[in-house]
Length: 215
Image (cartoon, rainbow, N blue to C red; front, side, top):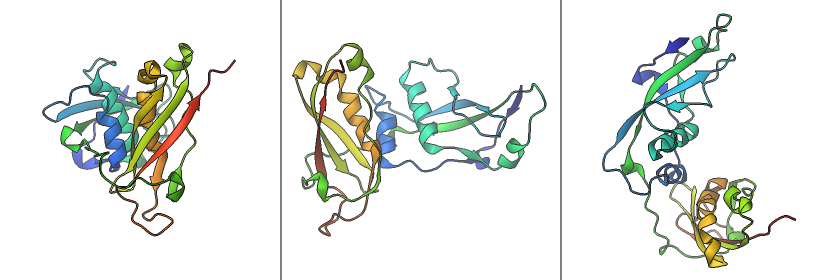
């Protein structure tokens, strides 16, 4: 095994959007009090690409720190100043990996105020990015639970979007769809202006989706 251990100044992390930071810290039921440095261990492909099957050293895979670290690395898409060296073919039969630290700081967690900002129709928004809706939540599908979900979303100052589940019918199935609703915001990046010329940052909008069990 050939192991690369880059120095801090050799690691380049892309800044996370506000919505991505929200996604990272949503893995915690209770927000930790202090930042934690997590050591990532990532395989290097034959083509010199790092990841995606990384591990967070020293943390159980079900722990919130493990899950948060994997999300962070996925969003930050790390690169290294010695990437040319990684791109060189490895010796036959030699596996390669890179081990490097990341800092998870709970102070970066957003605190959206869904009581603030005007409520607008989704049709008023202009999207710089709009991906297809996520599929049926797997746990709900296994339990054959459907219904109607209302999601409320808010455009952040960087025009990323944070969402939350507002209500669900029938109410007893809501817990199966909360995380799905919260993940919806990552599908969007909003243009700075609404169609009527108003500023998009801070506005709220709602979506309604019906989940029907396939037969």
